[in-house]
Amino acid sequence: MVYRPVGMSLERSLAIERETERQIKRHFPQVTHTFSRIGTSEVATDPMPPNENDLYIFYAPQKDWPTGNGAPRSKDELVEGIRKIGEEVYRGQTFEFAQPIEMRFNEMLEGVRADVSVKIFGDDYDVLERAAKQAKAILEKQAGTESVEFETAGRPKSIVVELDHAALLRLGLSTAEVNAAITDAVAGSEVGFIPHNEARHAIVVRMAEGLRANPAAILALPLRVGDYGMVPLSRVARLRETRTVEPILHDSGNRRAALMVNLKTSDLAGYVARARAAVDGQVELPPGYRIEFGGQFHQLEAAQKRLSIVVPAALLLIFLLVYAALGSIKEAVIVYTGIPFAVTGGVLALWLRGMPFSITAAIGFIALSGIAMLNGLVLVDHINSLRDGRDGDALPVDEAVRQGARDRLRPVLSTALVAAIGFVPMAIASGAGAEVQRPLATVVIGGIVTSTLLTLVLLPSLYRLVMRNPVSAGAMANRGSVGSR
Image (cartoon, rainbow, N blue to C red):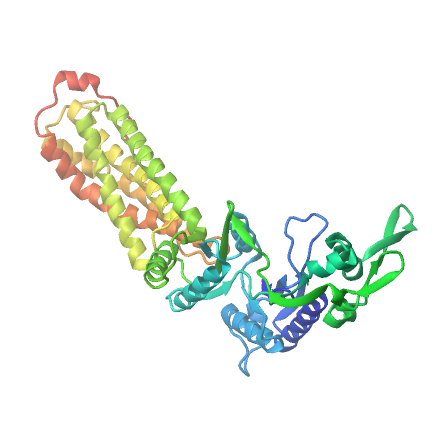
């Protein structure tokens, strides 16, 4: 995404963009071709002002890149090289680099084309811009920040026409007549049309471009007074040049300014927590002004709120299913101890690989809980069958625990190995979607390792400790069976 000063003409913006693309292809043979999108399409779902455009850059496979003479060796180096070339072509343009689908999702989520948006709400744009500059300087120093840019840069020049109402009264002119004269000369007046097949092309007459930008030519515009008189606009008006805010952006009816922050870290929640603490501690805002962090972080917060309901519900459902299979709350609780064992391994695996807790990791913990319960259920049900004498003579608790652990060693290990090995390709993935696959697979593999070891070692001991008393006939009748493996 390319951003230039607000108010730049379309012609000037196109000339800078063409030269930028030409220099990119000249300096980087890795780039195969480029194209840009600017303005408004027939289906205006993504309109852009003349000072902004999307620049799509296509490059060859990395194995075909040239080497030597300081040539980029990675995508990050290529991005930095393109950024420098763009600034050499025109220092007033800035770049935000992203994948096309990622950028589009960011824009749909929060209206800002970046990983994280920092929005400052208030009424006075001078205060908003001053606070945004302070926040930008703070965020650029934060670890994990790749780039920070203003959503809109600068204020375009505008010419304000100030009328002398006393002079208008003396000459018998109205403000509507003056406005019409200025509008016809600067914006243009439609005087006819040219038919072309079924289309009609309007004929608009207005001052030449050079005159429209000349205050003296505007002040010389003639105004009709009465039936025969003419006076120049300078008799009843004066021009004043000022800089205005454009565009004025709102969220839910609240005026705002925004910063676009792209990250080079996967710890989104941790980054926002550090950045928010730094900004809140150093940026002072008047009463009625506030700062909000959005973008992907806003979606992360919403997902975490949903998971705060989904995870307890899933764990409760798992417990009910285990209880329904065993018919004993005491035994269901014994099997349920596999979940802490599994969670311990999942957390340890994330820590060893340097991965933050994420939504996909949370989903991995849910899947892991089910796998851990399956192993514990298989072991406890077989011990129960040995104690009940379903497959022969009933055994005392100690003997049933020892034999059950030996009998179910192979099935439990087989179940764990199948699940763990099946997730290995996801854990080491590096292609598209790897950032989603790796945390989930890492949690499952780490949790399976610890839950399996602890299930085979600690769960039999825990069962022996809790269930040392003989099983009554009533308990035997009520206990269900899930079969043996």
